[in-house]
Image 1: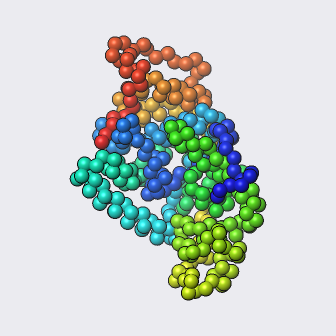
Image 2: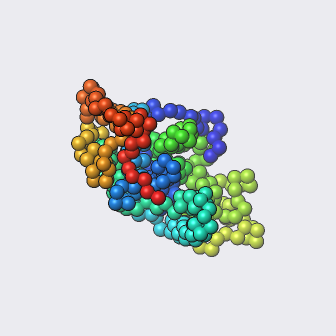
Image 3: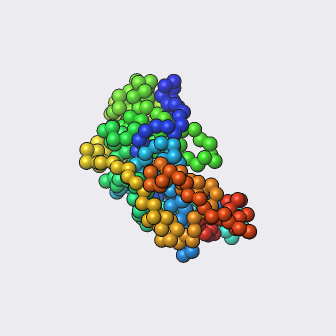
Amino acid sequence: IGGGPGVSRRCDMKEPTLGVSWTTPDQAQAAKALCPKGQGGDVLQNEEGETTSHLMGMFYRTIHMMKNGIKPVYVFDGKPPQLKSGELAKRSERRAEAEKQLQQAQAAGAEEEVEKFTKRLVKVTKQHNDECKHLLSLMSIPYLDAPSEAEASCAALVKAGKVYAAATEDMDCLTFGSPVLMRHLTASEAKKLPIQEFHLSRILQQLGLSQEQFVDLCILLGSDYYESIWGIGPKRAKHKSIEEIVRRLDPNKYPVLENWLHKEAQRLFLEPEVLDPESVELKWSETNEEELVKFMCGESGVKRLPQGSTQGRLDDFFKVTGSLSSAKRKEPEPKGSAKKKAKTGTAGKFKRGK
């Protein structure tokens, strides 16, 4: 969506409650969000060699939102719909190819290529998701398990007025009918990406389409659920429904896919399997500070909390949730080499693994 006047706007983190979509473990975007890299490109690990980057990413992204007055709700994916099986198979093929290319790059000693293909192989596991859920519980941040696609349930929450917007990089959230979509909300500050806010009603108005016609347009443009018709796009489209397009197609020029299940794709977007918004009760209570520190510094294999800016972020979070007194705790002054490390910020929470 290019976005004409009024369709989208740039904004900052000053909105009320946001429904944050959390995508499936095998999606590339989820892997980037859950598994950020440490300094120097190394994956963060604990002493047992287990990845802990997902906890760092979840922790600081959540703190950043809370610091800016946002009350996040995380929605985790459930079982993918059957129509997505083709896309998942393609991803498996791409992953297998990336593994071969990684081995070749390692044999050739091409460091940049090794890093590129290693990123493509990042995979978020059920354990990663479970650990993130446990972290959110300790932070007293609500999370929900969607029966199927997280974006669909996020859209349902927004439509029901439970949250202000769905925050995700997946534009399918608009196809599922979310009235408001926000992108780049959890993007790294280093990327300097402005937060974009899209309003579905304005998009439909400018396109001159109903929601049903918008769904057909998105299906024709291609999605995770079904292939589009080759050669048909927004520049050459004349009709406002898939049925009418198929009826008028020259089968010699535009062979429609055999057993093309476009009606199933339409139902998936218009009548998706979602959690019942009326049964959802969202609560943000006080943080379990003691258990949170224990989990991040003990159970996760961490020896001690970092000093400097990181400690400041912790204090910011506890201040927002009201779990600490207004008086800031004064840390003992480090001495000698420890003092130097604290100033440079090199004391880290996680061990870096290759």
